[in-house]
Image (cartoon, rainbow, N blue to C red; front, side, top):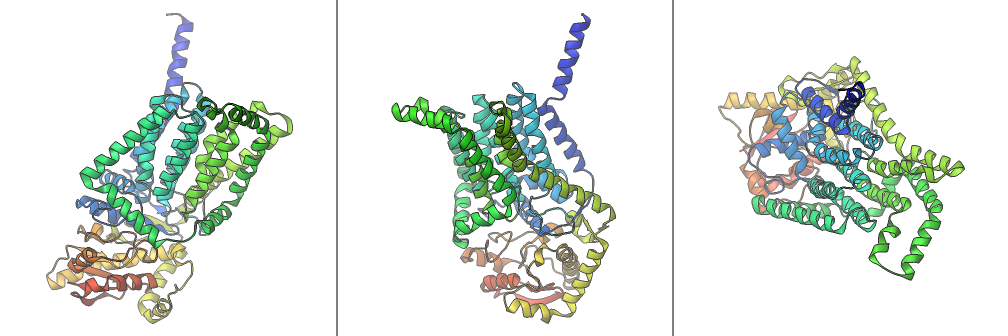
Length: 568
Protein backbone atom coordinates (compact mmCIF):
# COMPACT_ATOMS: atom_id res chain seq x y z
CA UNK A 1 0.00 0.00 0.00
CA UNK A 2 1.41 3.40 -0.97
CA UNK A 3 2.33 6.09 1.54
CA UNK A 4 -0.42 8.32 0.17
CA UNK A 5 -3.04 5.62 0.69
CA UNK A 6 -1.87 5.10 4.27
CA UNK A 7 -2.11 8.82 4.93
CA UNK A 8 -5.63 8.92 3.52
CA UNK A 9 -6.68 6.01 5.73
CA UNK A 10 -5.12 7.72 8.76
CA UNK A 11 -7.02 10.91 7.97
CA UNK A 12 -10.29 8.97 7.61
CA UNK A 13 -9.70 7.23 10.94
CA UNK A 14 -8.93 10.50 12.64
CA UNK A 15 -12.02 12.09 11.14
CA UNK A 16 -14.17 9.18 12.28
CA UNK A 17 -12.64 9.26 15.76
CA UNK A 18 -13.60 12.90 16.21
CA UNK A 19 -16.99 12.63 14.58
CA UNK A 20 -19.62 14.58 16.56
CA UNK A 21 -21.66 11.46 17.28
CA UNK A 22 -18.53 9.74 18.65
CA UNK A 23 -17.78 12.74 20.87
CA UNK A 24 -21.39 12.67 22.09
CA UNK A 25 -21.20 8.97 22.93
CA UNK A 26 -17.82 9.38 24.66
CA UNK A 27 -19.18 12.24 26.77
CA UNK A 28 -22.17 10.15 27.85
CA UNK A 29 -19.83 7.32 28.85
CA UNK A 30 -17.67 9.68 30.93
CA UNK A 31 -20.75 11.10 32.66
CA UNK A 32 -21.95 7.58 33.47
CA UNK A 33 -18.59 6.82 35.09
CA UNK A 34 -18.77 10.05 37.11
CA UNK A 35 -22.14 8.98 38.52
CA UNK A 36 -20.44 6.01 40.16
CA UNK A 37 -18.34 8.38 42.28
CA UNK A 38 -19.67 9.93 45.48
CA UNK A 39 -19.47 13.70 45.23
CA UNK A 40 -21.08 16.84 46.56
CA UNK A 41 -22.39 20.01 44.94
CA UNK A 42 -22.83 23.48 46.47
CA UNK A 43 -26.48 23.76 47.49
CA UNK A 44 -28.40 26.62 45.90
CA UNK A 45 -31.86 28.22 45.80
CA UNK A 46 -35.01 26.07 45.79
CA UNK A 47 -32.81 22.98 45.99
CA UNK A 48 -35.60 20.98 47.61
CA UNK A 49 -37.41 20.82 44.26
CA UNK A 50 -34.98 17.97 43.58
CA UNK A 51 -36.45 15.87 46.40
CA UNK A 52 -39.71 15.54 44.46
CA UNK A 53 -37.91 13.04 42.26
CA UNK A 54 -37.12 10.79 45.23
CA UNK A 55 -40.78 10.76 46.21
CA UNK A 56 -41.76 9.89 42.63
CA UNK A 57 -39.05 7.22 42.26
CA UNK A 58 -40.09 5.51 45.49
CA UNK A 59 -43.70 5.40 44.31
CA UNK A 60 -42.67 4.04 40.90
CA UNK A 61 -40.63 1.30 42.59
CA UNK A 62 -43.80 0.47 44.55
CA UNK A 63 -45.66 -0.02 41.28
CA UNK A 64 -47.48 3.31 41.27
CA UNK A 65 -47.95 5.05 37.91
CA UNK A 66 -47.50 8.85 37.72
CA UNK A 67 -50.78 10.56 36.96
CA UNK A 68 -52.75 7.37 37.56
CA UNK A 69 -51.79 6.62 41.16
CA UNK A 70 -50.53 10.04 42.23
CA UNK A 71 -50.93 13.61 41.02
CA UNK A 72 -47.89 15.14 39.30
CA UNK A 73 -47.15 18.77 38.37
CA UNK A 74 -45.62 17.72 35.02
CA UNK A 75 -45.24 14.66 32.78
CA UNK A 76 -43.94 11.28 33.86
CA UNK A 77 -40.83 10.96 31.67
CA UNK A 78 -38.42 12.72 34.01
CA UNK A 79 -39.56 10.64 36.98
CA UNK A 80 -39.09 7.36 35.13
CA UNK A 81 -35.65 8.40 33.89
CA UNK A 82 -34.59 9.40 37.40
CA UNK A 83 -35.94 6.14 38.83
CA UNK A 84 -33.88 4.14 36.35
CA UNK A 85 -30.72 6.15 36.89
CA UNK A 86 -30.95 6.26 40.68
CA UNK A 87 -31.33 2.47 40.59
CA UNK A 88 -28.27 2.08 38.34
CA UNK A 89 -26.21 4.79 40.08
CA UNK A 90 -27.26 4.74 43.76
CA UNK A 91 -24.09 6.61 44.80
CA UNK A 92 -24.52 9.41 42.26
CA UNK A 93 -25.05 13.01 43.34
CA UNK A 94 -28.85 13.28 42.91
CA UNK A 95 -28.90 16.55 40.98
CA UNK A 96 -26.38 15.17 38.50
CA UNK A 97 -28.43 11.98 38.28
CA UNK A 98 -31.59 13.83 37.31
CA UNK A 99 -29.75 16.33 35.09
CA UNK A 100 -27.90 13.69 33.09
CA UNK A 101 -30.72 11.14 32.97
CA UNK A 102 -32.37 13.07 30.13
CA UNK A 103 -29.42 12.12 27.92
CA UNK A 104 -30.90 8.64 27.72
CA UNK A 105 -33.56 10.20 25.49
CA UNK A 106 -31.96 13.35 24.09
CA UNK A 107 -28.56 11.90 23.15
CA UNK A 108 -29.85 9.16 20.78
CA UNK A 109 -32.20 11.62 19.08
CA UNK A 110 -29.45 14.21 18.78
CA UNK A 111 -27.01 11.55 17.59
CA UNK A 112 -29.30 10.77 14.65
CA UNK A 113 -29.45 14.47 13.80
CA UNK A 114 -25.68 14.94 14.09
CA UNK A 115 -24.98 11.97 11.83
CA UNK A 116 -27.24 13.46 9.17
CA UNK A 117 -25.68 16.93 9.43
CA UNK A 118 -22.09 15.70 9.66
CA UNK A 119 -22.32 14.22 6.16
CA UNK A 120 -22.50 17.78 4.80
CA UNK A 121 -20.78 19.97 7.38
CA UNK A 122 -18.72 18.98 10.39
CA UNK A 123 -18.48 22.63 11.40
CA UNK A 124 -22.25 22.89 11.73
CA UNK A 125 -22.50 19.57 13.56
CA UNK A 126 -19.83 20.56 16.09
CA UNK A 127 -21.34 24.03 16.47
CA UNK A 128 -24.60 22.36 17.48
CA UNK A 129 -22.97 19.72 19.67
CA UNK A 130 -20.88 21.98 21.92
CA UNK A 131 -23.77 24.10 23.30
CA UNK A 132 -25.89 20.98 23.70
CA UNK A 133 -23.22 19.33 25.85
CA UNK A 134 -22.64 22.46 27.94
CA UNK A 135 -26.32 22.89 28.76
CA UNK A 136 -26.90 19.15 29.22
CA UNK A 137 -24.00 18.68 31.63
CA UNK A 138 -24.20 21.79 33.82
CA UNK A 139 -27.11 21.88 36.33
CA UNK A 140 -27.64 25.62 36.12
CA UNK A 141 -30.41 27.91 34.96
CA UNK A 142 -30.02 31.20 33.15
CA UNK A 143 -31.69 32.99 36.08
CA UNK A 144 -29.77 33.63 39.29
CA UNK A 145 -31.65 33.93 42.58
CA UNK A 146 -28.86 34.15 45.15
CA UNK A 147 -25.57 36.01 45.41
CA UNK A 148 -23.39 33.13 46.63
CA UNK A 149 -22.62 30.47 44.02
CA UNK A 150 -24.56 27.22 44.09
CA UNK A 151 -26.24 24.73 41.77
CA UNK A 152 -29.87 24.97 40.70
CA UNK A 153 -31.99 22.12 42.00
CA UNK A 154 -35.08 23.83 40.57
CA UNK A 155 -36.25 24.47 37.03
CA UNK A 156 -35.27 20.91 36.12
CA UNK A 157 -38.38 20.26 34.02
CA UNK A 158 -37.81 23.52 32.19
CA UNK A 159 -34.19 22.71 31.41
CA UNK A 160 -35.29 19.36 30.03
CA UNK A 161 -37.92 21.01 27.82
CA UNK A 162 -35.40 23.51 26.43
CA UNK A 163 -32.88 20.76 25.65
CA UNK A 164 -35.47 18.66 23.84
CA UNK A 165 -36.60 21.69 21.84
CA UNK A 166 -32.95 22.38 21.01
CA UNK A 167 -32.63 18.88 19.52
CA UNK A 168 -35.90 19.29 17.62
CA UNK A 169 -34.95 22.70 16.23
CA UNK A 170 -31.49 21.51 15.18
CA UNK A 171 -33.06 18.75 13.13
CA UNK A 172 -35.80 20.89 11.61
CA UNK A 173 -33.27 23.49 10.49
CA UNK A 174 -30.38 21.33 9.30
CA UNK A 175 -31.40 17.67 8.84
CA UNK A 176 -32.38 16.48 5.36
CA UNK A 177 -33.04 12.75 5.61
CA UNK A 178 -36.74 11.93 5.86
CA UNK A 179 -35.99 9.00 8.14
CA UNK A 180 -34.00 11.27 10.42
CA UNK A 181 -36.82 13.78 10.57
CA UNK A 182 -39.42 11.06 11.16
CA UNK A 183 -37.51 9.66 14.13
CA UNK A 184 -36.68 13.13 15.40
CA UNK A 185 -40.17 14.61 15.28
CA UNK A 186 -41.94 11.55 16.70
CA UNK A 187 -39.35 11.05 19.44
CA UNK A 188 -39.06 14.69 20.46
CA UNK A 189 -42.80 15.32 20.50
CA UNK A 190 -43.42 12.27 22.66
CA UNK A 191 -40.63 13.28 25.03
CA UNK A 192 -41.90 16.86 25.19
CA UNK A 193 -45.46 15.73 25.92
CA UNK A 194 -44.36 13.58 28.85
CA UNK A 195 -41.97 16.20 30.15
CA UNK A 196 -44.12 19.32 30.16
CA UNK A 197 -47.15 20.24 28.07
CA UNK A 198 -45.83 23.72 27.25
CA UNK A 199 -42.89 22.07 25.52
CA UNK A 200 -45.24 20.04 23.33
CA UNK A 201 -47.13 23.18 22.29
CA UNK A 202 -43.90 25.00 21.43
CA UNK A 203 -42.63 21.97 19.52
CA UNK A 204 -45.87 21.73 17.55
CA UNK A 205 -45.54 25.38 16.51
CA UNK A 206 -42.01 24.74 15.25
CA UNK A 207 -43.12 21.64 13.33
CA UNK A 208 -45.99 23.52 11.67
CA UNK A 209 -43.55 26.17 10.47
CA UNK A 210 -41.17 23.47 9.23
CA UNK A 211 -43.98 21.91 7.17
CA UNK A 212 -45.04 25.28 5.75
CA UNK A 213 -41.42 26.14 4.91
CA UNK A 214 -40.85 22.82 3.17
CA UNK A 215 -38.25 21.64 5.70
CA UNK A 216 -40.52 18.83 6.90
CA UNK A 217 -42.38 16.94 4.18
CA UNK A 218 -46.11 16.54 4.70
CA UNK A 219 -45.80 12.76 4.39
CA UNK A 220 -43.06 12.71 7.02
CA UNK A 221 -45.14 14.89 9.34
CA UNK A 222 -48.16 12.59 8.92
CA UNK A 223 -46.02 9.51 9.55
CA UNK A 224 -44.57 11.10 12.69
CA UNK A 225 -48.08 12.00 13.87
CA UNK A 226 -49.20 8.40 13.35
CA UNK A 227 -46.25 7.07 15.36
CA UNK A 228 -47.04 9.65 18.05
CA UNK A 229 -50.69 8.59 18.16
CA UNK A 230 -49.89 4.86 18.19
CA UNK A 231 -47.50 5.24 21.12
CA UNK A 232 -50.09 7.27 23.04
CA UNK A 233 -52.75 4.65 22.32
CA UNK A 234 -50.44 1.91 23.55
CA UNK A 235 -49.62 3.77 26.76
CA UNK A 236 -53.30 4.46 27.36
CA UNK A 237 -54.31 0.84 26.86
CA UNK A 238 -51.41 -0.43 28.98
CA UNK A 239 -51.35 2.03 31.88
CA UNK A 240 -54.14 4.54 31.38
CA UNK A 241 -51.36 7.12 31.47
CA UNK A 242 -52.54 9.51 28.77
CA UNK A 243 -56.05 10.20 30.06
CA UNK A 244 -54.76 10.52 33.62
CA UNK A 245 -52.10 13.01 32.48
CA UNK A 246 -54.71 15.00 30.56
CA UNK A 247 -56.89 15.14 33.68
CA UNK A 248 -53.95 16.38 35.74
CA UNK A 249 -53.26 19.12 33.18
CA UNK A 250 -56.88 20.30 33.35
CA UNK A 251 -56.73 20.40 37.15
CA UNK A 252 -53.53 22.45 37.00
CA UNK A 253 -55.15 24.87 34.57
CA UNK A 254 -58.01 25.34 37.03
CA UNK A 255 -55.50 26.11 39.81
CA UNK A 256 -53.55 28.55 37.61
CA UNK A 257 -56.05 30.70 35.72
CA UNK A 258 -53.89 33.83 35.52
CA UNK A 259 -53.80 35.72 32.23
CA UNK A 260 -50.89 34.88 29.94
CA UNK A 261 -50.13 38.53 29.08
CA UNK A 262 -48.49 39.38 32.43
CA UNK A 263 -46.48 36.17 32.17
CA UNK A 264 -45.26 37.10 28.67
CA UNK A 265 -44.21 40.52 29.96
CA UNK A 266 -42.46 38.96 32.95
CA UNK A 267 -40.60 36.47 30.76
CA UNK A 268 -39.54 39.20 28.33
CA UNK A 269 -38.29 41.43 31.13
CA UNK A 270 -36.49 38.60 32.90
CA UNK A 271 -34.54 37.79 29.72
CA UNK A 272 -34.59 41.31 28.32
CA UNK A 273 -30.98 41.39 27.12
CA UNK A 274 -31.32 38.33 24.91
CA UNK A 275 -34.98 39.00 24.08
CA UNK A 276 -34.31 42.56 22.89
CA UNK A 277 -31.37 41.40 20.77
CA UNK A 278 -33.50 38.70 19.14
CA UNK A 279 -36.33 41.16 18.46
CA UNK A 280 -33.85 43.60 16.93
CA UNK A 281 -32.28 40.86 14.81
CA UNK A 282 -35.71 39.76 13.60
CA UNK A 283 -36.46 43.33 12.57
CA UNK A 284 -33.13 43.70 10.76
CA UNK A 285 -33.71 40.45 8.86
CA UNK A 286 -37.17 41.59 7.84
CA UNK A 287 -35.65 44.72 6.32
CA UNK A 288 -32.76 42.92 4.65
CA UNK A 289 -34.98 40.19 3.19
CA UNK A 290 -37.98 42.42 2.46
CA UNK A 291 -37.48 42.43 -1.31
CA UNK A 292 -37.28 38.63 -1.54
CA UNK A 293 -40.30 38.16 0.73
CA UNK A 294 -42.41 40.66 -1.19
CA UNK A 295 -41.43 38.97 -4.44
CA UNK A 296 -42.51 35.56 -3.16
CA UNK A 297 -45.74 37.00 -1.78
CA UNK A 298 -46.55 38.58 -5.15
CA UNK A 299 -45.85 35.34 -6.98
CA UNK A 300 -48.16 33.47 -4.63
CA UNK A 301 -50.89 36.11 -4.95
CA UNK A 302 -50.75 35.97 -8.74
CA UNK A 303 -50.75 32.19 -8.96
CA UNK A 304 -51.62 30.45 -5.67
CA UNK A 305 -50.18 26.94 -5.51
CA UNK A 306 -48.96 24.59 -2.81
CA UNK A 307 -45.57 24.46 -4.50
CA UNK A 308 -45.14 28.20 -3.82
CA UNK A 309 -45.92 27.98 -0.08
CA UNK A 310 -42.40 26.99 1.08
CA UNK A 311 -40.83 30.03 -0.61
CA UNK A 312 -43.31 32.20 1.28
CA UNK A 313 -42.51 30.77 4.71
CA UNK A 314 -38.84 29.77 4.49
CA UNK A 315 -37.40 33.14 5.52
CA UNK A 316 -34.85 33.84 8.23
CA UNK A 317 -36.97 36.50 9.91
CA UNK A 318 -39.99 34.21 10.09
CA UNK A 319 -37.98 31.31 11.51
CA UNK A 320 -36.41 33.56 14.10
CA UNK A 321 -39.68 35.25 14.99
CA UNK A 322 -41.54 31.96 15.44
CA UNK A 323 -38.67 30.46 17.45
CA UNK A 324 -38.58 33.56 19.65
CA UNK A 325 -42.34 33.41 20.24
CA UNK A 326 -42.18 29.70 21.09
CA UNK A 327 -39.29 30.30 23.48
CA UNK A 328 -41.12 33.17 25.16
CA UNK A 329 -44.22 30.99 25.54
CA UNK A 330 -42.16 28.27 27.23
CA UNK A 331 -40.71 30.87 29.60
CA UNK A 332 -44.16 32.11 30.67
CA UNK A 333 -44.52 28.97 32.80
CA UNK A 334 -41.02 29.01 34.24
CA UNK A 335 -39.30 30.32 37.35
CA UNK A 336 -36.01 28.91 36.14
CA UNK A 337 -34.70 27.32 32.99
CA UNK A 338 -32.43 27.72 30.00
CA UNK A 339 -34.22 30.59 28.37
CA UNK A 340 -33.85 30.82 24.62
CA UNK A 341 -31.17 28.20 23.92
CA UNK A 342 -33.15 26.43 21.22
CA UNK A 343 -33.02 29.56 19.05
CA UNK A 344 -29.32 28.83 18.46
CA UNK A 345 -29.82 26.52 15.42
CA UNK A 346 -31.63 29.37 13.64
CA UNK A 347 -28.81 31.77 14.53
CA UNK A 348 -26.24 29.24 13.34
CA UNK A 349 -28.07 28.98 10.03
CA UNK A 350 -27.76 32.76 9.70
CA UNK A 351 -24.01 32.48 10.20
CA UNK A 352 -23.76 29.89 7.44
CA UNK A 353 -25.62 32.27 5.12
CA UNK A 354 -23.90 35.50 6.06
CA UNK A 355 -22.14 35.65 2.68
CA UNK A 356 -25.35 37.22 1.34
CA UNK A 357 -24.53 40.42 3.18
CA UNK A 358 -21.55 42.73 3.38
CA UNK A 359 -20.43 45.93 4.99
CA UNK A 360 -22.68 47.42 7.64
CA UNK A 361 -25.45 44.89 7.09
CA UNK A 362 -23.08 42.00 7.78
CA UNK A 363 -21.61 43.73 10.83
CA UNK A 364 -25.06 44.44 12.25
CA UNK A 365 -26.27 40.86 11.76
CA UNK A 366 -23.12 39.36 13.30
CA UNK A 367 -23.30 41.74 16.27
CA UNK A 368 -26.93 40.88 16.98
CA UNK A 369 -26.29 37.15 16.58
CA UNK A 370 -23.50 37.43 19.16
CA UNK A 371 -25.70 39.49 21.50
CA UNK A 372 -28.49 36.92 21.16
CA UNK A 373 -26.41 33.81 21.78
CA UNK A 374 -23.29 34.51 23.84
CA UNK A 375 -24.86 35.86 27.08
CA UNK A 376 -26.70 32.60 27.81
CA UNK A 377 -23.70 30.35 27.18
CA UNK A 378 -21.25 32.64 28.98
CA UNK A 379 -23.66 33.19 31.87
CA UNK A 380 -24.23 29.49 32.53
CA UNK A 381 -20.52 28.69 32.23
CA UNK A 382 -19.67 31.60 34.53
CA UNK A 383 -22.12 30.41 37.16
CA UNK A 384 -20.74 26.88 36.91
CA UNK A 385 -17.16 28.09 37.27
CA UNK A 386 -18.03 30.17 40.33
CA UNK A 387 -19.85 27.27 41.96
CA UNK A 388 -17.19 24.64 41.36
CA UNK A 389 -14.28 26.90 42.31
CA UNK A 390 -16.14 28.25 45.34
CA UNK A 391 -16.91 24.72 46.52
CA UNK A 392 -13.22 24.20 47.24
CA UNK A 393 -13.68 26.31 50.36
CA UNK A 394 -17.13 25.00 51.26
CA UNK A 395 -18.11 22.70 54.10
CA UNK A 396 -19.96 19.46 53.47
CA UNK A 397 -23.36 19.39 55.20
CA UNK A 398 -23.37 16.67 57.86
CA UNK A 399 -26.62 14.71 57.62
CA UNK A 400 -25.62 11.06 57.57
CA UNK A 401 -29.17 9.79 58.01
CA UNK A 402 -30.29 11.16 54.64
CA UNK A 403 -28.30 8.85 52.34
CA UNK A 404 -27.14 10.79 49.27
CA UNK A 405 -30.02 13.26 49.62
CA UNK A 406 -27.62 15.52 51.52
CA UNK A 407 -24.66 15.28 49.12
CA UNK A 408 -24.24 19.05 49.27
CA UNK A 409 -21.90 21.70 50.61
CA UNK A 410 -21.97 25.42 51.33
CA UNK A 411 -19.96 28.16 53.03
CA UNK A 412 -19.13 27.40 56.64
CA UNK A 413 -20.83 30.61 57.77
CA UNK A 414 -24.06 29.69 55.97
CA UNK A 415 -24.01 26.16 57.39
CA UNK A 416 -23.56 27.58 60.90
CA UNK A 417 -26.34 30.10 60.28
CA UNK A 418 -28.63 27.26 59.20
CA UNK A 419 -27.93 25.43 62.46
CA UNK A 420 -28.65 28.62 64.41
CA UNK A 421 -31.93 29.13 62.56
CA UNK A 422 -32.92 25.53 63.30
CA UNK A 423 -32.38 26.21 67.00
CA UNK A 424 -34.45 29.39 66.72
CA UNK A 425 -37.29 27.47 65.06
CA UNK A 426 -37.22 24.98 67.93
CA UNK A 427 -37.09 27.51 70.77
CA UNK A 428 -39.39 30.24 69.47
CA UNK A 429 -42.20 28.60 67.45
CA UNK A 430 -44.63 31.42 68.29
CA UNK A 431 -42.59 33.82 66.17
CA UNK A 432 -43.01 31.75 63.02
CA UNK A 433 -46.62 30.98 63.90
CA UNK A 434 -47.22 34.75 63.95
CA UNK A 435 -46.10 35.04 60.33
CA UNK A 436 -47.96 31.92 59.21
CA UNK A 437 -51.21 33.10 60.80
CA UNK A 438 -50.98 36.20 58.60
CA UNK A 439 -50.33 34.08 55.52
CA UNK A 440 -46.78 35.39 55.30
CA UNK A 441 -43.28 33.93 55.29
CA UNK A 442 -40.72 35.26 57.75
CA UNK A 443 -38.67 36.23 54.70
CA UNK A 444 -40.30 36.93 51.34
CA UNK A 445 -37.53 34.99 49.55
CA UNK A 446 -37.19 32.30 52.23
CA UNK A 447 -37.09 29.31 49.89
CA UNK A 448 -34.34 30.83 47.74
CA UNK A 449 -31.94 31.00 50.69
CA UNK A 450 -29.41 28.14 50.84
CA UNK A 451 -29.47 28.35 54.63
CA UNK A 452 -33.19 27.47 54.57
CA UNK A 453 -32.43 24.52 52.30
CA UNK A 454 -29.72 23.34 54.70
CA UNK A 455 -32.03 23.85 57.68
CA UNK A 456 -34.63 21.69 55.96
CA UNK A 457 -32.06 18.91 55.51
CA UNK A 458 -31.04 19.08 59.17
CA UNK A 459 -34.70 19.00 60.21
CA UNK A 460 -35.33 16.06 57.87
CA UNK A 461 -32.53 14.11 59.53
CA UNK A 462 -34.15 14.89 62.88
CA UNK A 463 -37.42 13.47 61.53
CA UNK A 464 -35.77 10.23 60.39
CA UNK A 465 -34.15 9.74 63.79
CA UNK A 466 -37.36 10.66 65.64
CA UNK A 467 -39.46 8.19 63.62
CA UNK A 468 -37.02 5.37 64.31
CA UNK A 469 -36.95 6.25 68.01
CA UNK A 470 -40.76 6.34 68.23
CA UNK A 471 -41.02 2.98 66.49
CA UNK A 472 -38.51 1.40 68.88
CA UNK A 473 -40.20 2.87 71.94
CA UNK A 474 -43.70 1.81 70.90
CA UNK A 475 -43.00 -1.44 69.08
CA UNK A 476 -44.57 -0.27 65.81
CA UNK A 477 -43.52 0.19 62.21
CA UNK A 478 -45.03 2.84 59.98
CA UNK A 479 -45.35 1.32 56.53
CA UNK A 480 -46.96 4.30 54.80
CA UNK A 481 -45.64 7.79 55.46
CA UNK A 482 -47.06 11.10 54.25
CA UNK A 483 -45.76 14.62 54.85
CA UNK A 484 -47.73 17.86 55.05
CA UNK A 485 -44.92 19.63 53.27
CA UNK A 486 -43.79 20.52 49.77
CA UNK A 487 -41.69 17.35 49.53
CA UNK A 488 -41.88 13.88 51.04
CA UNK A 489 -38.62 11.92 50.66
CA UNK A 490 -39.18 10.04 53.93
CA UNK A 491 -40.56 6.81 52.41
CA UNK A 492 -37.42 6.72 50.28
CA UNK A 493 -35.13 7.43 53.22
CA UNK A 494 -36.77 4.82 55.46
CA UNK A 495 -37.53 2.18 52.80
CA UNK A 496 -41.28 2.56 53.32
CA UNK A 497 -44.22 3.48 51.10
CA UNK A 498 -46.12 6.64 50.21
CA UNK A 499 -49.93 6.59 50.13
CA UNK A 500 -51.51 6.55 46.69
CA UNK A 501 -53.29 9.54 45.12
CA UNK A 502 -51.39 12.15 47.17
CA UNK A 503 -49.86 14.93 45.06
CA UNK A 504 -46.08 15.22 44.86
CA UNK A 505 -44.49 18.67 44.81
CA UNK A 506 -47.24 19.82 47.14
CA UNK A 507 -47.60 23.56 46.60
CA UNK A 508 -51.11 24.13 48.00
CA UNK A 509 -51.52 27.38 46.09
CA UNK A 510 -50.55 26.13 42.62
CA UNK A 511 -50.21 22.36 42.33
CA UNK A 512 -52.48 20.51 44.76
CA UNK A 513 -56.08 19.95 43.65
CA UNK A 514 -58.88 19.82 46.19
CA UNK A 515 -58.89 16.28 47.61
CA UNK A 516 -61.67 13.96 46.55
CA UNK A 517 -63.00 10.93 48.38
CA UNK A 518 -60.22 8.60 47.16
CA UNK A 519 -57.53 11.04 48.26
CA UNK A 520 -59.04 11.49 51.71
CA UNK A 521 -59.35 7.70 52.10
CA UNK A 522 -55.66 7.41 51.22
CA UNK A 523 -54.80 10.05 53.83
CA UNK A 524 -56.91 8.20 56.38
CA UNK A 525 -55.06 4.99 55.57
CA UNK A 526 -51.57 6.47 56.06
CA UNK A 527 -49.81 5.08 59.13
CA UNK A 528 -47.88 8.30 59.76
CA UNK A 529 -48.52 11.86 58.57
CA UNK A 530 -45.71 14.28 59.35
CA UNK A 531 -46.26 17.96 60.11
CA UNK A 532 -43.07 20.07 60.00
CA UNK A 533 -42.56 22.96 62.41
CA UNK A 534 -39.03 24.15 61.58
CA UNK A 535 -40.23 26.55 60.48
CA UNK A 536 -44.01 26.75 60.74
CA UNK A 537 -45.23 28.09 57.39
CA UNK A 538 -48.52 29.12 55.84
CA UNK A 539 -48.07 26.52 53.09
CA UNK A 540 -47.75 23.65 55.57
CA UNK A 541 -50.78 24.93 57.46
CA UNK A 542 -52.74 25.10 54.20
CA UNK A 543 -51.86 21.48 53.43
CA UNK A 544 -52.90 20.42 56.93
CA UNK A 545 -56.25 22.17 56.52
CA UNK A 546 -56.71 20.71 53.03
CA UNK A 547 -56.23 17.13 54.22
CA UNK A 548 -57.82 17.60 57.67
CA UNK A 549 -60.96 15.52 56.90
CA UNK A 550 -58.74 12.53 56.17
CA UNK A 551 -56.85 12.92 59.44
CA UNK A 552 -59.91 12.57 61.67
CA UNK A 553 -58.98 9.00 62.64
CA UNK A 554 -55.39 9.86 63.57
CA UNK A 555 -54.05 11.09 66.89
CA UNK A 556 -51.55 13.93 67.11
CA UNK A 557 -48.21 13.24 68.80
CA UNK A 558 -45.00 15.23 69.14
CA UNK A 559 -42.09 13.37 67.55
CA UNK A 560 -39.50 16.08 68.17
CA UNK A 561 -39.28 19.87 68.55
CA UNK A 562 -39.39 20.16 64.74
CA UNK A 563 -41.99 17.53 63.95
CA UNK A 564 -45.51 16.67 64.97
CA UNK A 565 -47.11 13.53 63.60
CA UNK A 566 -50.59 12.20 63.01
CA UNK A 567 -50.44 8.53 63.97
CA UNK A 568 -53.07 6.05 62.88
